[in-house]
Amino acid sequence: MAKETPTEKKVATATSTTRSTNTTATKAPRTTRAPRADALRNEDALLEAAKVVFANIGVDAPVREIAAQAGVGVGTLYRRFPTRSDLVVGVFKREVDACAAEAPKLATAHPPGEALSRWLKRYCQFIVTKKGLASALHSGDPAFDALPAYFRSNFEPALTDLLAAAAKAGEARHDVDAYDLLRAIGNLASTGGKDGPDGMEHTYRMLDLMIDGLRFGTPR
Amino acid sequence: MAKETPTEKKVATATSTTRSTNTTATKAPRTTRAPRADALRNEDALLEAAKVVFANIGVDAPVREIAAQAGVGVGTLYRRFPTRSDLVVGVFKREVDACAAEAPKLATAHPPGEALSRWLKRYCQFIVTKKGLASALHSGDPAFDALPAYFRSNFEPALTDLLAAAAKAGEARHDVDAYDLLRAIGNLASTGGKDGPDGMEHTYRMLDLMIDGLRFGTPR
DNA sequence: TTGATAAACGGAACAATGTTCCGTATCTGG
DNA sequence: CCAGATACGGAACATTGTTCCGTTTATCAA
View 1 (spheres, helix red, strand yellow):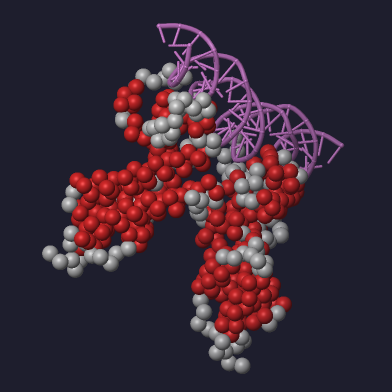
View 2 (view 1 turned 90 degrees about the vertical axis):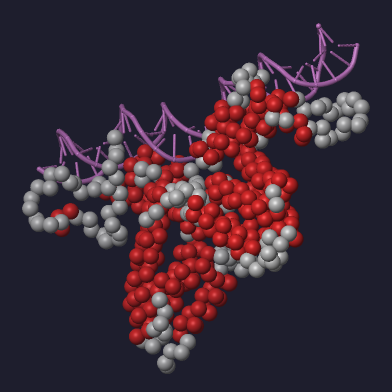
């Protein structure tokens, strides 16, 4: 097993919430057993490691590198992700999930307008960070075919809710389509990314401009 | 080890490669010798083989395949093209050369309007055939950085001449820019290529439309 | 607690590919 | 025709993605 787990603290990350999703009521199903704890831990470690390695080396980073970073053998990696592409897909989805999941959190922690602008900034970071992955999407590999739909089906509702709340509170106009905005900001952020002359500053300034535009004509 | 890469010797379509034409006729260029005949032959065979293999298998075809098709060993291939990318570049340039070189030939063999339309059709074939290579150009490999300029610097003058002659003969309008036309037809041909429902027919119909447009308003 | 066993693990081994090396064969100039 | 520069072929090496399988371990019931 993964003897190489000196840093066991990771376990404390309360991954428990996502457990017990299936068939808890039935008794002693010989055919199905609860997933092993180390397997779950490793799947998480692999996705996390892949995210880091992709960011450092690029999406073309060797699989061995990722396995090493995760403290796991390649065999383990391949049981979970039968293909390199599957790993890329996994990382992409996980990042989409994480970004989309912040929308409701921000909505409860801040007033609607503030929540909206904070999330849009977060979304910008997602776009810039995942530029490498995004280019992989257009590489012709059919494994990535489903990702655009996944992207939209997660982000559009999240932003729609934020927009509606902001509009209702009089902090944004009503006539803005969430998907239009996602695309516009996506284009904005994907050109002139973090490697620009002044980091992400330029992108953020443009984003602020757009956010002000959202407020324009709003009753005060 | 083989480091320096003299690589291209210009367009090289000229037949004779005698060294004596260089500068003054002083004796004893001890340092340079005429290239061996087999070397020249193999370079040609490699480019030709690569063209075929790229067309059949794709630009990602194994190098060994190309060497085999050319009837040479990989060592020979790598002496001429130190990198896989160099081979791709070589094929691309050679195809550009071949296509551009037909312009003057057509100009002498046909009346200006006919020459123009024939060459545009030929250009269409180039675009469709090289779709695979074109996508490789946008792969981030710096070896391909010079190709767009090469493309333009060969095609634009060729087409400019054809256009001017046709306009002078009253067989085309005067207000059409060669580069604009190259781009327009390039876009036309790159979508819906030869794999479409009716082969290249659709593309050719659109091309004819455009050629008619070139004639429109021309004095007769 | 303990033991049987399904599940998971690690990493060696395999296959495909780009690239390098070098002993041998061939061409060229004199 | 000879000597030496030049080029050749393909085995060998390096880097990946992927598979296999003997070993280890978490789980569960007794």
